[in-house]
Amino acid sequence: MTARSWISVPADSPFSLANIPFGIISTAVRTNHRPAVAIGEYALDLEAFAASGGFSELSSSQQDLAVFSQPTLNAFAALGRSVHREVRRYIQNVLAEDTDYPHILKSNLSAQKDVLIELTEVTNHLPMLIGDYTDFYAGRNHAYNVGVLFRGPDNALQPNYNHLPVGYHGRASSVVVSGTQIRRPCGQILQDHMAEPKIPLFHPSKRLDIELELGVFVCKANDIGDPVPIHEAEEHLFGFVLMNDWSARDIQAWEYVPLGPFNAKNFATSISPWVVLADALEPFRCGGLENKTELLEYLQEGKTNNVYDINLEVDLISLCYLVCVIQEGIGTDIQAARTGTTTTITRTNSKNLLFSFSQMLAHHTVTGCPMRVGDLLGSGTISGVEPGTQGSLLEQCSNGKATIKLKNGEARTFLQDGDTVTIRGWSVHSDGCRVGFGECVGSILPAHFASDT
Image (cartoon, rainbow, N blue to C red; front, side):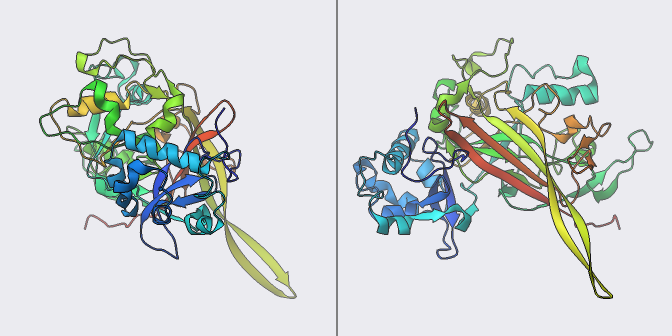
């Protein structure tokens, strides 16, 4: 049974005492960006906590307290997995109902006022300074589904797929924190793929899509020329976030041959703001998708429980305008109000991965590619095999041949302006305590349209 906190934590909160995710916050009163952890409906301001002597009972951390005054988590992440583990366990102890250190916070009302902030009063920021971002393609169900759409079932997966974690280099500068609005991209689109000659138009994307993913941050660098061995890879991984790698399918269809996606993927990638440490997910290890292909030695992990049992959901909120006519004597007052209808379009699980993040990192560095603290790796789109478990609209609408029915009677193939997409993810202990990520949210803004001329 997991320990309980003296702070009231709602039963459905993703931020139980079993979690303690790290993030970067600011407030209206103190606008500087600084580290915090989430517990229930509160953020524990780690800069204020350190300044008030909150870490006084953790003697090993005294020389490193400056990391809690930094505007990103990079410095803390660079301290290594053993330090992350020690700091998280100490904070759990301080916040536990039966804490060994009640004087630090539980019985110290003055300190509570200084360091505990309601989450509703907090602004979240990107948790890490991201130097590089690589997106993998480890969701085999998604890869197969998309392959069937474009190449048929006999050639759905490329010959290399089961042998290595396929990936491509993304754009770190457009990784944004949850809540950032997403501008519909414009680009070259081929409207008639059968026409000759093939002449593209410049137009806003009509096939704007989502990709449900997990992301992981690197916390330990390797030197150029030195691969990360598979048995050491876990020590290089800091923690996990939810990810939506927004995709413009029509732009991608025209541009991706021969070098893969470019503008179709570089305009935005949303991540959740709270980093769930690897240790918090340790109880939820499980086996992933079976790979009957014998892997080369550098990818042989030596364990079957190498992914995580994380429930994943995607909501689509459709905004519509309601017009209310109010009669006042002989006058008429027309009022327009925006209201949203929420439809859960996807329910799946992160165990639907063929390769682990350790295998992704080992493959990424096998050439000697140097990774740096703060680098971000994406899992690739996570899909199940049943209807309603697919992690992209492309799969759900069969590339525009079918429609997705929303609760308000509307239908979708791809995203419309005003749509909001919310991704949630959580694991549950046997006693009901959740280890979750919060939300990864993005709303679609109209394109800045420009013509060919």
